[in-house]
Length: 465
Ligand code: BES
Ligand code: MN
Ligand code: ZN
Image (cartoon, rainbow, N blue to C red; front, side, top):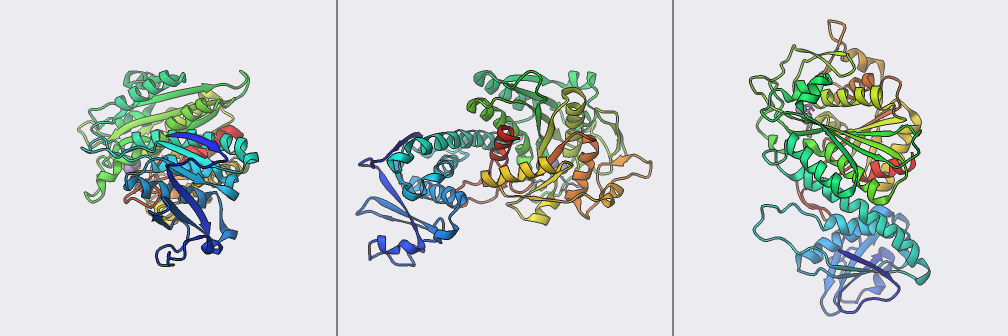
């Protein structure tokens, strides 16, 4: 997709015109309300004028999200009819050029590695804005397009199944991209994980013939003395539940259990592409959670990287074991300014907030607020969740240790309480993306599968926190 910002429409390509509900008079009189409600994302193509009209809804309620949806829904509708060159008349909405470009780029991705016939990608996009807005729109539009392209990279990683992407191939792929982008990359294989006493990662990986990895990505573009921001992403390449095995229904969705790791990998490359002058380190602990003969078991006591002992009561609560090691490593070795982890951690988070909203926990108000502000701007719905001493009580084991599950009640909050103990006094935030990480069905502006949720939030956070 090539992008041009101009004040004059390109002849030949499809025109995309955006209309709020009060602008119905600008439509040809033959278009009925049933054909085009002008609600956000509604659209109709008029052959005679070679124009796609897209609704923005109520003028007073138009936000960046509205433009993201309008551009995305418009692009998907046009691509389905074989049209791939667009002229978008942004007009009075030029301040939302970034969101509109995100909509286009995200709409351009679908997972079709195994489809015999691939769809044509978007070709030329011409964005028409008032002359004096061209420079600002181009700057915002190109920046957002970069973030969205890397969001698509995260989706591509997360969508590939467990027989193709497993810890060692995920690490190879991260290394390959890191070399291409010029981002520092170190991979700890199972020998190095053993030598380093990464007990949590090793326990989860033990049941699989495919050994675990820790991927470390370094974007050190700030002053030498600047303590890094550490981003941690859970990358369970497939989650069977292990010995506490999951039921068969929906288990195939656990290919997406590496979405947090994919988001961190992509965010690190986006920071590189945007030239962000900060020290940021990405940690991606990766394992396959399988019930093999060497698998960890309920009742096991596992010693994590920082020396804390954990009583395993449910091997399906594996993500927090990976994160515990990564958080411990970050705290002890990297001396970070802050740690932010992102993970498809609990089904309970979906029960609490629904399938398009992520939960946010933090031990530091400023950091938590920054994550929320960045997620809002990125169009990635995230909502603050509590910590109470009762949750710590729920995960206290009879032996005085902590246990890796606190049971059904407040499952997302007890998972967060578990992670919080590993962060200790380091400013830390945790984003649970269990359900927003993927869509089971295609929506107007997004293909089915991985959403890349979190890339936009993490990039903005690293830029500003
Ligand atoms: N990967 C799952 C969480 C998940 C569930 C993600 C549904 C996406 C959709 C995680 O490892 C898990 O199994 N969590 C358990 C925790 C429980 C055993 C305490 C859960 O949510 O049931
Ligand atoms: Mn699990
Ligand atoms: Zn999992």
